[in-house]
Length: 67
View 1 (cartoon, rainbow, N blue to C red):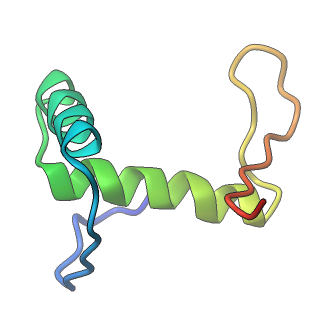
View 2: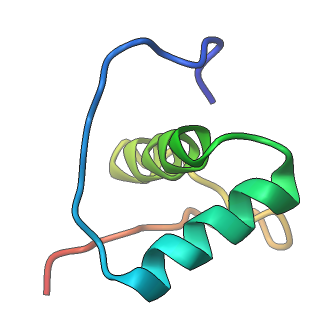
């Protein structure tokens, strides 16, 4: 995960249920909505570099949002 919280803006349009989900996760983690999204992007970047490992088995995880 990145060492900083970042300072550049990235926006996305989502539906109400996704916004509520992201807000609930941010609240659960005690961080902002933007920080939750940044953490997800960190995991995606690690996945693309074959550096995201399953905490249970150690296998490499791949996140592919492309159908």
